[in-house]
Every structure is written in C-alpha cells, then in structure tokens.
Length: 557
Image (cartoon, rainbow, N blue to C red; front, side, top):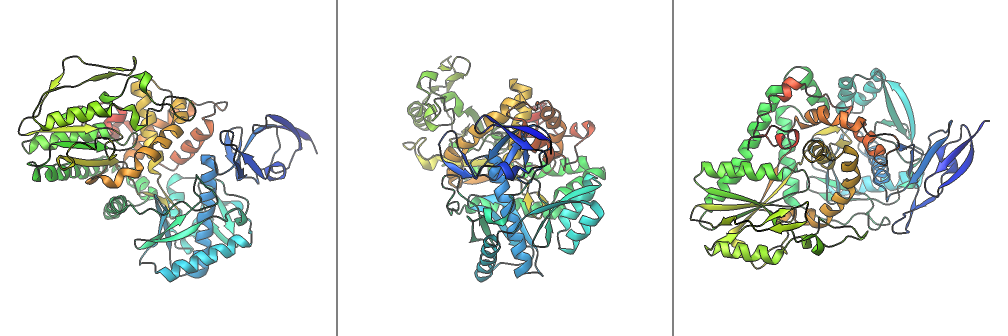
C-alpha cells in the first residue's frame, strides 16, 4: 500500500500511515486538553478542519486533530450517539410508541412520547436497556441510501419528520446510521461504538424525562439536575404555537416557503410577537403604582435592545412614559475591568459594571432626584459625563437592558419591589426531525454573525472564534438567573432561519479551510443546507419594527 504522511495537531508531529487505514487505527486512546492538562477519551477528529468519525478512511495526506468531550464537536458527537442508543432502547422496550427528543434544558435534552405521559417505571426500563446496549459495545455503522428507500424506513418507524425533511431538501441520497439492526439519521458523525457512552442518566421531568449527558466540569458524572419551570413553560408554549400553525418541523417550514406562503408566515409571526410585548406592557401597567424600573436581560443576540424599544412603545400606548438606558453605560474604566483565566479582559463578568454608581443612581431616581447618566466610550474604554440629566416623573418608567439585569447581586440595596424583570431569548423549539430541535445557541450565533458583520465590521471568522468565550460568560452570568424573571419573552420567529440563511450562507463561505473557524463554519453551513432560504422580495416584507431588523438592518424603532 502507498504510504502517506499525517500531521497530528495534538502533538505537532508527522506520522507515516498506509493509505486505506482508518482514523481509529492511529488515534490515541486519550487527548489532553492544552489549557487544563486533563485527559479525555478520543471521540472524533477534525480532518483538515472538518469533523470526521473515527471510522474515516485515510487515502491522502491530511492535517488531523483528535478531539474529546472537552471540544464542542466532541460533545456533540457524544450526545448524538447517546440519542441513537436511547432511540434503539425505545424500539426494544416500547415498539408501538414514538419518542421525540426535544429542546435542550439545563438538565439535558427533554424527551417525551408523542401522545402520552411517561411513567417513572418506564423511564427505568429505558435506562436499563440503554445500559445494556452500552455494555455490549455495539458498533455504529453508516450507509448511503436513495432517499425513497430511507424515507420508507423512517415512515415504518413512525418518524415522519425525518422522511419529510429528506424530501424537502431535494437530495437523491441520504446517509443513514445503523445500530443493532435499527436505522436512524443524525446531522453529524457518531462515536465508533456504544461502549464510548458510559456516562448518562434519565431524569423524570414534566410529562417526559431529561436525557442527561456528561457534565463539562466532570465528564465522569452526568450534568447536575436543575429544574427551570419558567423556561420549560416558555418552550412548551412556543411548541404548542408551532403545532397550531402546522409548522412544528423544518420540513413543514420548508414546504410553507416552497408553497409561496412566506409573507403570510412573516405577518403571522410578527402579529404574535406584538401581542407578547403588549402582554408584558399590560402586566407593568397593572402595577404602575409600585413599579418604576424594568430590567431586561438575556444572552447575546437575543434581541434585548429591540425588545426594550418595542416594550417601551407598548407602554406608551398605555399612557406610561418609558426612558430607555443601556446598562453598558455603567461599565467601569478599562483599567478596572477584570481579567479572565487567560489574562484577557472579561467583559462578561458582573464586575465590569460600576455597581456602586448604578445603585446610587437608581436609588436617587426612586427618590425623585435627578441624575447625570454616563455615556460609555468603548473605543477609549471609559465613561464620560456630558450633561445628560434624567429624573422620573409620576408616569415615567425606566427601562434598562443588559446581560446582568437578572443577577440579584447587581443592585441588592435598591428596593426590589419597584423592579420588574424580563428575560428575553430566542427560545425556538422548531424540530429538525424526531432526534433534533433547532439549537437556540446556533440561532443566536447566526444572528450575531450577520449583525456584527453588517454593523460592527467584525468578520464571520472572528465572530465564530469569539463565540466560545461568549458562551462561557452566558453559562456563568446569565443562564443561572433566568428563573428570576417576572416574565420570559421569547424573541424567536418561525421565519428567521430561512431569513438568516440568505444573509449567513455567503458569510460562512468566505471562511478559508486554513482558518481555525473552518470546522464551525462547515457545521453551520451543513445545518443551513436543510433550510429553504427566503427570497429578497419576501425579506422586504419584514416590518421595520421587527426584532429581525436589529440584525439585518432597516429598523425604525
């Protein structure tokens, strides 16, 4: 056999390999995290920055980086594989039922039967069967099949969303995975065999259960059990609305667009969202004698700025006079900004804000006094006082938005009874198929990439490379406090992924194979291949007050 050379990124060395060998033949059993020194079992690899399963065959020289659970793609590979084991256990224990693996929750992936509540003893049966399958170390295998053939398999397995998705994206062939004689499809590679998946659990939750995968902090244990009822109810409400519109899956969304109904869908989504802002304004107005301050928090690209402006509009309709201030105006000077573990400025930390000054200003406003609002100059890294005076009169309302607005440590000395808290996020529960909901994180990432490239001159590559740091900040400073909100505001819109595809796809294509962001660009591009894009004439129908205009331009708020 011909000999080829493989450059291993993990140790920087070149290795001679016979053409035709698989990655798993040369993969180390463990990879070492360069930051922590911890070791993780090898789960997959990046070959020339493209994610590949360990059964990938080598015929040409490549650059290879082996990855474990410490890498985002490693985690996704593990979780996809675990979902297949769950579906296989389901086929064995409950062959007459259909299982849906739904949205992500703080405790894992929410799963349910499609037509009834799951009992605790049934969850135990599924868990035991999954453990049996893992102990057998059964292989995952992949096969390319004609769409008509694979669709028949999925229809026979009561997985109509998979079958429908195949038809609407128009591919002649589809990659199908097999485990112990059962077929399934996944949007990315799997680990070699079930024996890799020893850490998991099933936790009863609502009418179903959570599929718990390893914790990022300690991969030997499942993620901690946390119940967030408000988040669950928000996702449930959105899922019910999708069901009522007849668009609960990407296949149904694609078909709606292919049928020429995009503008009707845009109008319907915007009408629903306007009702949501009006509902929040009604709650504030009902307690106008008590409430004087509204805090709006949410993760990156959740539409906080647009939400604060649209909420202000609805409050004006009711006779209130909102004044909007961004909490970013209260950032400390750059030299006082805390550093992260890598020695870089940690702009996500609570300590980036001048909490003492903020508390003084809020207390003064509640006493009816006048304050001078600072303006923060991000280029110079310091606040300026330019005579922007403010005070609150009888029907005035202060609306402030920022990532820390739900953190109880932000302004603990201020009278909490005068504050109304709103959590805004793009909490889509639209399903790609029976195994996958659209990731709210990916949704926000695409929003941010489009906006930052248009407004801030930030390249798509830089956005993708910064995103892990943004996510770490959200996990630490935002998500733990989302249940503190008086109301959760869902900014997701059914038509936004088709809209984002139109703008994001060309940006992703600009990222070169040599870039460290290439693997993420490829993943997002492949995901968008399942979505039918909006046309320019349809995008023009998006109203100028829409949250989407914050990201694509043309907003008049």
